[in-house]
Image 1 (cartoon, rainbow, N blue to C red):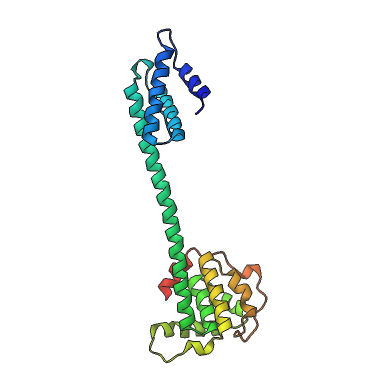
Image 2 (cartoon, rainbow, N blue to C red):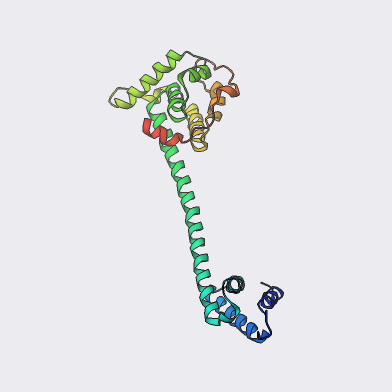
Length: 234
């Protein structure tokens, strides 16, 4: 805080002739020294001293304000500031951890899809279980029938339930296509938006039937929590 601001604040407390400016200057100088020691920072200390003085003037009569009271107000104010900073830091770290967790979950789920299903089953299963598409909507996206989508979903779910069923998913995947779908699935889950996947479907070689052009009406709003939904389904 500037000296000009400090002097202005000091003048505000001099309401009667008995107030001595030298006393208030002395109070404020001592208060600043205490605040510098408390915060270990000149800038934080100046701010704290100013806040403590303003609070004292606002809540106490001029006659009751003493150096000890000012120091107590400053101490309590600084403790509140430290608590707020700690909570803000915790919130940021928690946010980073949650984002990291979401990315980690997405990687695990994408690997599960690619290691368990054929490309077509993986796409259908993801749209249905993660993003809550109706089978009719998926059929429209893939330019196929509602019955075909339901049959594919049924086979996919049975494959999850019966892990002993003889099946080698790698035989259905080309390496280039596997990498393409891994990126598309991962981006869709992390961003909670399947739009990028849907738009890329015509470029996926193993989709034998070229999908119809996808209109905006075909793409619903983002799912609220695709990762958790897919975890439950898987």
